[in-house]
Length: 167
Ligand SMILES: [Fe+2]
Image 1 (spheres, rainbow, N blue to C red):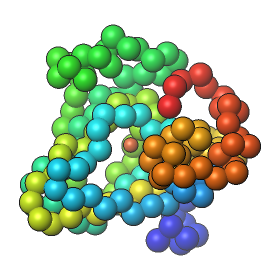
Image 2: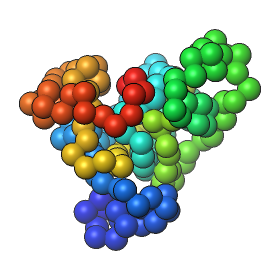
Image 3: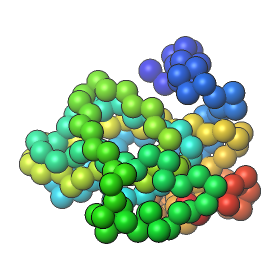
């Protein structure tokens, strides 16, 4: 699907984004995430601006997608982020994604998580990542945290981001 010639232009048109590139990170450009009971994703921001997910299989229970839209933009907005982490925020939206749902999400600006999974059935989701600058990759720290390794390109591109947001 990702290599179907119309896929990238379709996503770009949906986002109405002129500057639009595939993530150049070899570990994170296209992945299938598999998660079992007790897992999910803790609250985080994405390194890349545009994240497209395709739900493949849900767990038996849990796995709601929760997000606080545009909670940071030009600055980190730690006060509002703290409220989300303390479960005191009224900005959090929760949605259930079903297999086949394609979600277009601005994860660099919207704090988000997947609530812990329950049951024996694993959750599968395909994740396609896009960016607004060519040759962009994740930081070495982020690559190590998420994928357990760092490639030469992470070191070569470290510190070259256009914005000053933390990962
Ligand atoms: Fe994310």
